[in-house]
Amino acid sequence: MTDTPTLFVTGGCGFIGSAVVRQLISETDALVVNIDKLTYAGHRSTVQPVADSDRYHFARADVADADAMARLFDQFAPDGVLHLAAESHVDRSIDGPSDFIRTNIVGTYTLLEAARQYYRTLGGPKREGFRFLHVSTDEVYGTLGDEGAFTETTPYDPSSPYSASKASADHLARAWHRTYGLPVLVTNCSNNYGPYQFPEKLMPVVILKALVGDPIPVYGTGENVRDWLYVDDHARALRRVLRRGTVGETYNIGGKSEKQNIAVVRTICRLLDERAPRDDGTPYAEQITFVDDRPGHDWRYAIDCSKIEQDLGWTPEETFESGVARTVDWYLAHREWCERVLEDRYAMERLGTAS
Ligand code: NAD
Ligand code: DAU
Image 1 (cartoon, rainbow, N blue to C red):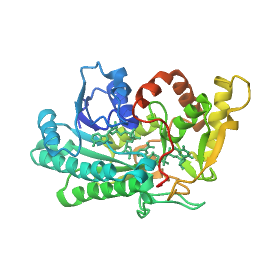
Image 2: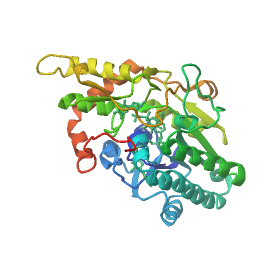
Image 3: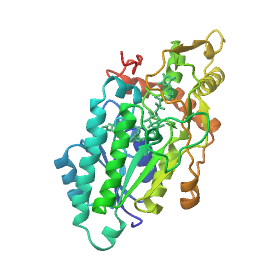
């Protein structure tokens, strides 16, 4: 791949995709084509810091629209694709799996096919350098008990409609490599956190519920474990895999930062106590409320990321402590952004009870 590649980023108005777009524009010379349908989870404000660059293009399109994808490949002749567009929230997949099947499975298939047809037309260095990076999740591996960590060879065993749809997409991506020779790479990453995350996932929910004085919902006992990675570290890892990864390989990406949910929630409450104390000076932790568990709730995720560390020299830069503090500060400074993206879309009610 050249130093000035044209790259497609699908889902580039979402949480992680926008971090990738912002990095690519500010830290590289790539031309970036952000392909996003702008669902409830996608907002152009997430890329506003780089949107004026003449190396940034936005295409509002659905990855499941074959004609639109073919036109974009024709028009821009990309050197690589970072495929992040997805329905991403487990709780929503429990309430309504259909969009997850359509976007995550059919959408990935459609994009792979468009990429394959385009790749067939390439020759020389452009063909040799072309890469398709399919971005996935550690949730495809299912749940861990109290010991061990997911490696790239852990068998797939997804629990939720979301993770089952991502698992399907991963299988398709690998099949397009083995069968058609499309230069595919797959990454499976743990829980991301940081700026611009839509306020439906744990960290922003806790921060916003705390600030308005609402109960802070903790599912089940709060002892479930997630392995937290700051979003900019994930974006750096994806760029590294795209550039230096071996075609056909899978790379697990994780933060080496396992925490019980209740510990995450208490950490955020403590940070808020310091930065935005409640009027009466009592601790935010008083708002913590244990609620009915998520159906099919995976107990524990932990990523063994030694392969990407050893083979590609990537390692997370942010510690959990500094990353959470940055995240809390970002949400405190961006209350207006939260209100804007939530407006008419989500009233922060409980999702995913399967009731
Ligand atoms: P997100 O929900 O914040 O953003 C998804 C983006 O995709 C939105 O901008 C949305 O508008 C767009 N989109 C949805 N359907 C589309 C379609 N049919 N066509 C085009 N665009 C569409 O998601 P995220 O948290 O940024 O996750 C991005 C990717 O990373 C997903 O593939 C997800 O499975 C994966 N991932 C997420 C995490 C995490 O912790 N958030 C961890 C590992 C992997
Ligand atoms: O592991 C990677 C996955 O991480 C990604 O593939 C998903 O796209 C991403 O959404 C995330 O999935 P989780 O289900 O782990 O994230 P969520 O923020 O929804 O929940 C994190 C944990 O916190 C989980 O154990 C459920 C719990 N939880 C969540 C919410 C929203 C609560 O206790 N209370 C809540 O209000």
